[in-house]
Amino acid sequence: MNDSGYLKVAVPNKGSLAETAAQMLSEAGYRQRWDNKDLVLLDADNKVEFYYLRPRDIAVYVGEGTLDLGITGRDLLLDSGAQAAEVMKLGFARSTFRFAAPTEAGLTVPDLAGKRLATSYPGLLQCWLADRGLEARLIRLDGAVESAVRLGVADAIADVVQTGSTLHKAGLAVFGDVILESEAILIKRATGPEPEGLALLQRRLSGVIVARDYVLVDYDIEADHLAAAMELTPGLEGPTVSALAKPGWSAVRALVPRAGYQQLMDQLWEVGARAILVTDVSACRL
Image (cartoon, rainbow, N blue to C red):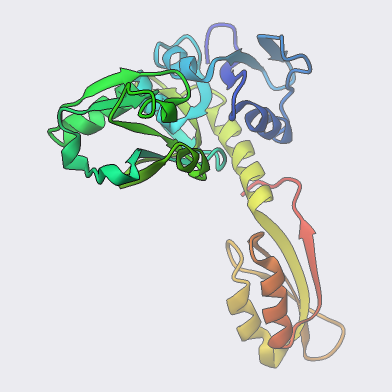
């Protein structure tokens, strides 16, 4: 922690990362700004100062030690070349970084040698190509990279792909292996002591991630079917099993993945579970 005694955390001020990052911090118990024009917010109760910055700049500030921690994308961190390191994955803004070219071009990755490649991530792409002994002419664009081939600026592009629909509309198709799988991450300076307050922030954010990804399931089950039911609901550290007043029956509680919980309820019913209830988790500490 810096001399002010407050943990300084950078938060994206706009773009795909901004809204979800602020919401996640709010769910973790931290104050967040009401006015998008605010550049700094002081959370005195938690001894944290939040700085709202361009996502591309966050890794630089953290790497230089100006700020203690930051939320940004893995792609932006690697592209910056900053002396910052990933601390934890935050589970949102997932995307892949891929090559794309006109379908009829039939390009492969080795074919990129000497070609013109348009990208918004020249630092990241340059390192990837260098590691594979490839040299290409990189053309940096800040947006609408998918138009570069049509406008004659590039032979192929390297860009973030989420659904691929934008590439398809531009007449492009991905090729080659995935360059990078990216998502929102928490970062700190690569060297130096761990910022005071980092462990607490990680625990809180982890609690939010679990609350979003898991639900709590409760059900009653006869002793003869208990083992089969627990195989379906192993929980994170094992389910809680309590005896019911009804002889030979137990009540079971466990955290289970939110995805597919309806199918899980069906499976529990089939093995004999009854009074099956699913509850949202608003917060937790694991």
